[in-house]
Amino acid sequence: MIFSTINQANCFLCFIFFGIICALISKIFFVLFLKNFKKLPIKLLFECIFYTISALFFDFLLVYLNFGRFSISLLLAFVGGCLWFNLISKNLVVFFETKWYTLVNKMIQQRKMKHANKSKKS
Image (cartoon, rainbow, N blue to C red; front, side, top):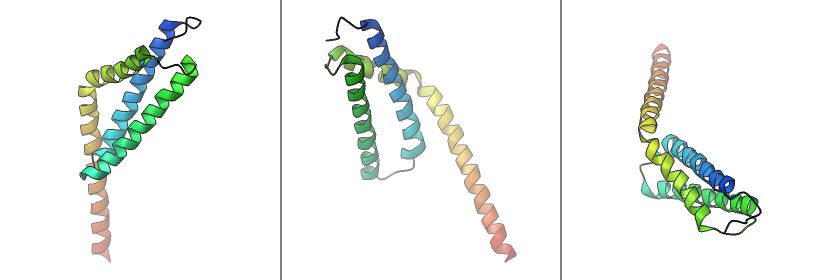
């Protein structure tokens, strides 16, 4: 339970905010790094590492903001912030994912062309 000596609404909103921040970081991490890994064990390893760091961050917030006392409402606020961001950001992430994909493909094609031109000149 949240202590009555601290402002409950502010603590609840902080956990929602940090849940949103965690979801934003997870979206960026998964789009940039995990799309390339087609092998399931590597993907699972990276997801495990990320979610472990996320759980440790939640524990740190619990100790820092709620004096170490576990509260189901704070857990629901953190998870709710993550879910809320995931529901809202689906179209935005798809847009940026396609932009990132085309940018990376252009860079790869340019490097291949440079390498092919250098090998033809030699």
